[in-house]
Amino acid sequence: MARDSPRQVVQHATNFSEASRRPRTESPSASTLGRVDLFDTASLDPAGLPKASPTSPLAVRMRPRDLSEVAGQSHLLTPGAPLRRLVDGSEGRAAPTSVVLWGPPGTGKTTLAYLVARGSNRSFVELSGVSAGVKEIREVIATAKRALASGGPEMVLFIDEVHRFSKSQQDALLPAVENRWVTLIAATTENPSFSVISPLLSRSIMLTLHPLDDAELGLLIDRAVGDDRGLGGSVRLTAQARDQLIRLSGGDARRALTILEAAAGAVADSAGQDDDVADSEPGPGQAVIEPADVQRAIDVAAVRYDKDGDQHYDVISAFIKSVRGSDVDAALGYLARMIEAGEDPRFIARRIIILAAEDVGMADPQALPIAVAAAQAVQLIGLPEGRIPLAEAVVYLATAPKSNAAYLAIDAAIGDVRAGKIGMVPPHLRDAHYAGAGRLGHGEGYVYAHDEPYGIAGQQYAPDELAGRRYYTPTDRGYERQVAARLTKIHQLLDPNGQAGDAADG
Image 1 (cartoon, rainbow, N blue to C red):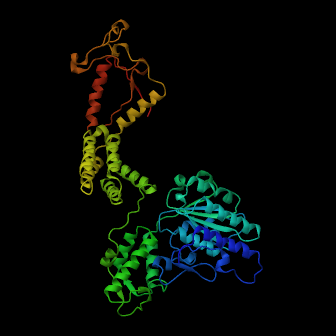
Image 2: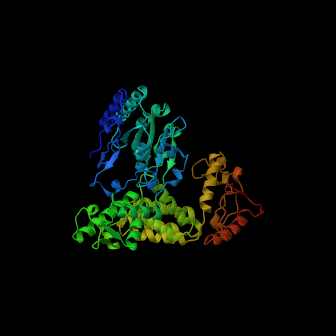
Image 3: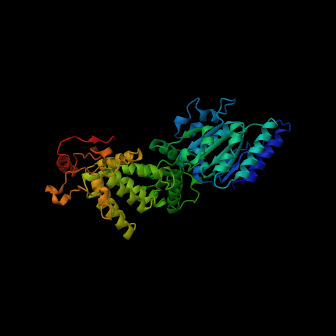
């Protein structure tokens, strides 16, 4: 069944509002409930709730009917929790008025919205962040207000992919949430702190959904194999195939059931069974799904990575910290994840250059040229071959000695400049090449370093205000140990009186 358009959604809710004014002796029908078909292939049962057909995808047929069938998210469904009160249909002002569900795909955001609709006596309307506009939002809210004014129930407004709403679209929701004209359930795969406006967040309870773990995915897979709504026992997974399916799913329940359905269809076809595996009768000829069947059902596991969202920042953050922490294997794993997800290799190369300068630094001065060479190689040859110089640079940086002394030094110097601690350039260091500079004393007394022993001239270089100020403090790691020993001698030659400089604050 096709998903209703926003205008049809409003008409459904309007039908309910009108019907609520008429006396009735039986439960309202689907048309009067105003509930929206949450699933593309679902129909409405007599109570007005979505009902999957035998031809619906396996993930739709196996959608939980109540909380007992929900796998995962137990931290959100404990008795008394805000979401649990919504699902249980709690009434009164203590119930939440707005909830933002944040989590990766396949973790149950839409399912929980469906269960809220089932558990409460509210009307239910769904809008998509992709297609709905301000006009549709206002029409739905106006319908909800009319229903409340006529004594009808409160509306649950479910907005899928709310992060796709513009600021003006989200602003349009504020009066309805503020005045409790609707109970808003907004679902997003993006961090709401970045994708949802602050006024709406401040009026909402933000709940985080987690990817399903292996045990929870296994439970869903086993149920789908044996349940009559699913495959009805017509196929059997080997233990190895089950483990592979869980691994490929990446914590995504919908993905697990989609791959399972594809694998089941493949083995049914190869065994000469009926195409509709769910209707096949189990028996001695029960089809067996092997790891190879799972692999044929999907070429490459989809990498959970959004180049414009949280995963982009989370993965690159973990990559940087793994290199800095010298865990070469973890760093290579994150590198592979970015490459397979289609991350721009130039972005990765730039981060590697920054890593070389910031985290390896003078402990191994070769790190920076190697990182730059890897970036140039990627620019010349591209992917997939570019993965090799990137990997070489990552291995070099992760296994190199680490120092951020140069990074801390420049930041301390910049801090002084921003604080106004700059002083005047000493006269003997000022430009003396132009006519009249000598009369101003510029260059007078300057000592040419190459004329001095060791090529170091013992004279003041910093402004008076910063004389003796020390920004760079080398570590004792890698090549920087040699730098530290040489720097000690340099300081002695620059300051023959042996007065210690002031270390810059970190």
